[in-house]
Structure formats: structure tokens, C-alpha cells
Image 1: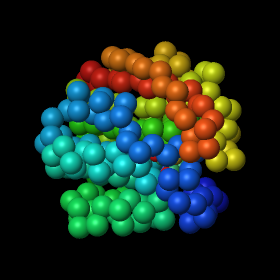
Image 2: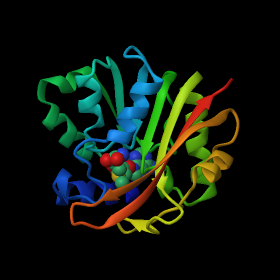
Image 3: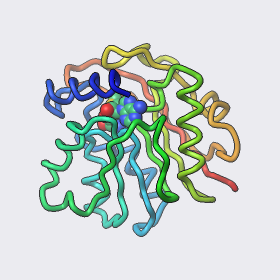
Image 4: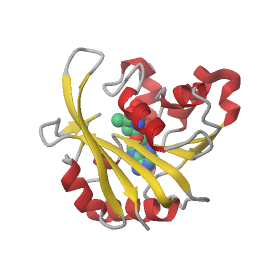
Length: 204
Ligand SMILES: C[S@@+](CC[C@H](N)C(=O)[O-])C[C@H]1O[C@@H](n2cnc3c(N)ncnc32)[C@H](O)[C@@H]1O
């Protein structure tokens, strides 16, 4: 975990949260999917949430059981500082998703731009093991990756690009593709990046 953690700690320590390529003022597509698929009492986890404002927007809408997991403590520190007193209402988890053992079941598993960094089969398998261990029957699994025509790398690291269908094949049963969307994300410096969003329902 050391090298990877050092990489992400370095990124978040060197740059403002608004100056990274993936920055969104609001994660509107993610927010729309979470609010459409889960009630406010649901246990929601944002995998590799980093300093994303998704947690702010979920708290604002009354979601009471939100967790954010990231390999980078520095990333979570930025989110906590931004939230101020509201940070105590969130469960913060510093962990590598490929080694993490979920302590409970979640009703919503959200991941924007994390699974696509896992280019080795064994790391993808480890992520899917955590996903299976950490989601309840009926859970919504919302995963955004670079699309097939998206960038081939991010933050200096190679990525695996997906369509909703290729991602469905990789995650496998019991995750059933239920919805999908394309998004063209504009980075803070004006470059366009194509993202693919897929929503899965855990059917058993
Ligand atoms: C491109 S950023 C996306 C951040 C956030 N999801 C968003 O949309 O703003 C990728 C995030 O994944 C985290 N990350 C990368 N590899 C990880 C891993 N193996 N386990 C947990 N977090 C990881 C990074 O620290 C970073 O915050």
C-alpha cells in the first residue's frame, strides 16, 4: 500500500482540492443516482471519495449514515476541514480498498474514478471481494469510470476504461446493470474527459 498511498498523499498535499483534474463543484450525476436509489436512513459509502463534495451534498439532503473511504488521509482531511462541525456526522475510513474488510453492509456503494485505477486482475478481484462483503441485498452500486473513449491515464497512473456493459461483465453476479449515463467532465483547466456511469442492483 505504501507506494500508492504516498502517491495520493503527495497529490493531495501538493494541490488544492479545486485544482485536481477530477474536481467537481457538485457531483450532480452521482447525487442524482444516490438520491434516486436510496432513502435518507440508508448506509451510504463513497469509495475513494477523497475530498469530493458529494458528502456535503448528502448531509445537506439529510442522509444520516454516510461513510467516506480513501487511501489518502490528506484527502479526507481536506473534506473534514471544509465540513467543519458537520464532519463529526460522517464515518471516515483511511484504507486501501483492495485490502479493506467492510465492518458492515451498505445500501449504497458509490465510486467515482477509483475502480478504473485497478489495472491488475488481482486488485480488481480484491475490490470485488470487498464489494460483495460490504453490500446488502438490493443495494445500489454506482460506479463511474473513464469511458471507452476517455483518457488512458489520470494523475500519472494508467487506468482501465469501461462501458457499462464491460463493467457489468467484470463485476459479475449478483450485480445487475440497472441504469447508465455518459458524462463529459471538464477539468479545472478546460480539458474534456468522458466518463461512464453505471448503476447496479445487487439482486441476492
Ligand atoms: C480521481 S480521484 C477521485 C476522487 C473522488 N471520488 C471524486 O470523484 O472527486 C481517485 C481517488 O481514489 C483514491 N484511491 C486511489 N486508489 C485507492 C485505493 N486503492 N483505495 C482507496 N482509495 C483509493 C485517491 O486517493 C483519490 O482520492
